[in-house]
Amino acid sequence: MSTRSYSDAVNNLNSLQSNAATLEALRASGGRMSEFAIPEMLEYLERIGYTPEDLNRMNVIHITGTKGKGSTSAFTDSILRHTKPDWKVGLYTSPHLVAVRERIRVNGVPISEEQFAQFFYEVWDRLDKNTTRKYPSTSLKPAYFRFVTLVAFHAFLSLKVDATILEVGVGGAYDSTNIVPKPVVTGVTSLGLDHVAVLGRTLSEIAWQKGGIYKKGVPALTVQQPEEGMTMLRGRAEELKASSFEVVSPSPELEKIKLGLAGRHQIQNAALAIALSRKFLEARASMTFEDPLPESFAKGLERARWPGRCQSVTDPKNENTTWFLDGAHTVESLSACIEWLVSPEVALQPTDVPRKRALIFNCTGGRTGSSLLGTLLTRIGDQLKASGSDEESTRFFDHVIFCTNVTYADGGFKSDLTTHAIPENDLAHLKTQKELASAWAELVPDFPSSNIHVLPSVEDAVKVVRELESPESKTQVLVTGSLHLVGGVIEVAGLSEVAL
Image (tube, rainbow, N blue to C red):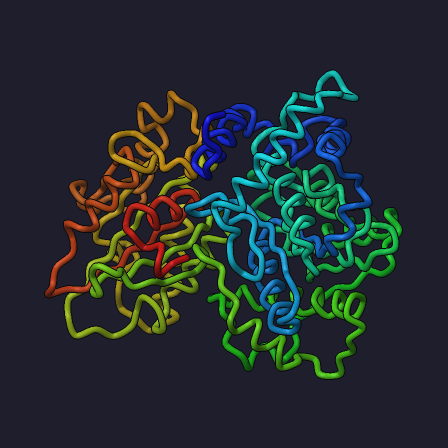
C-alpha cells in the first residue's frame, strides 16, 4: 500500500463488512453464527501473536445485556477515571457515532487517527504474514467487528492500560469479546423483554447467551431481572463456576445525585456500574469502601458522558434550534427516550416564542416500524398528561421525517459511516421509509400529508429542519430509532463539537 492513513484504514476495514443477509442471520442467532465462533476468534488472536492469557493483562470488566450495557460501561469508565486519575483506563464499545476510533478510548478520549491507523495495520500485517489456519472455514481476515475487537485488544495491550471496560457486541457466549479467560468482574444489565419478540427467542435463551460471559473464579453480577431470566443467569453462574453471584439494586444515595446520563432508567445502570467498580478496585487496587457511594464514584457518575443517548444539544449555528439525540431502537428504549424528552425539564420547557417540533426517524427494516411509532405516540400522550400539559400527542410534532442512514444527498456515506447492512433493493426504493410514513398516516389520519417526508439521505432530512428554522421561533428536533441515524445527523448538521 502506498499510504497508510486513517482514511486508508477505514476503507480497508469497510471491505470486511458483512452484507445485510449475514447480519440478519447473526442477529437471529444471538451472535452464534456457528459452533466455531469462539475457536475462530482465538485462531485470529493467535495469528496476531497473542495467547488468550495475554488478554488477562488488560484487567477486564466485561459487560453485556440487552439494554443499558453501553451506558453502564460509560458510568464504570468514568468512576474508575475519577477514582484512579493516575491510571490508564481503556473502554471498548460499539457501535460508533461518527468515527470508528470512538470505539477504542483511553482515559475517556478516542485514540487518535494516527494511533488507530498504526494499530490497525499492525494487526492487518500480522494476519497477512501468518496465514496458518486451524479451521478450513476460517477466512483469512475476520469480519468487521471481530477485526476492530482485535485492534482494540492490541491497542490496550500495547498502551499497557491499567483497566479495560469491555462491552459485548452481540449476545455474550459467542461474542468476539468473550475470549478473555479471566476478567476481574462481569456484569449483565437489563434483559429487555422486547428483544424476546424481536429475536423470536425466549427470555431463558437470551439470558443463557448473556450469562455466557460469566467465568470460573470471577464475580458475576446482574441487576433485577424477570424471574425466568434471573433463574437462567443464576444457573449460568453456577454452571460456569463464578466465584459469586450478586443481584444489584440501586441505593437511596443514587437518588440524591444528578447523573451525567439523562433518564430515570439510568439509575439501574449506575447502580451496576458502582458495584462493578467496587469489586474491581477491591481486587486490583486493594481499596476498601465503607461509604455506599464514595465521593469519587459520585463525581464519576455526575460527569459521565455517553453521546447519542438521551442527549440534548444546542445547534452551534443556530441557538434557537435544539437537537434531542437518542439511538433508541426497541419499544422499551423508545419508551425511556420519550419519558426523558416529554418533560418540563426538556422539551416542555416554557417559551415565550412559537415552537416547531420535528421527528427524524429510521429503523432496521426487520423491526416493526408501526409498533415503534405507536409506542412513541402512546408514550408522548402519557407523558403530556403526567406533566399537566393540554397538548395532544398527535400534534406534538409539526413535521415527521423518515430517511435512510445514507449520509449525503449524493448517495455517498462518510467513510466511517459506510454500511453494507442495508438491503440494496430496500435502499433504492426507500421501502422501509415508505412503510414508516404509511404507518404514521394510519396512526395519525389527520396529520398533514405535506408534513410527512420520505427522504433518501440524512443530508436531505437536515435540510428540511434548516428550512423550518426562523429567528422568531424555536425548533426542536428528536432524532431516534437508530444510532447510525444519530451519528449521521451529528456529522451532517455539524454537531460534533457539542455532541461528541
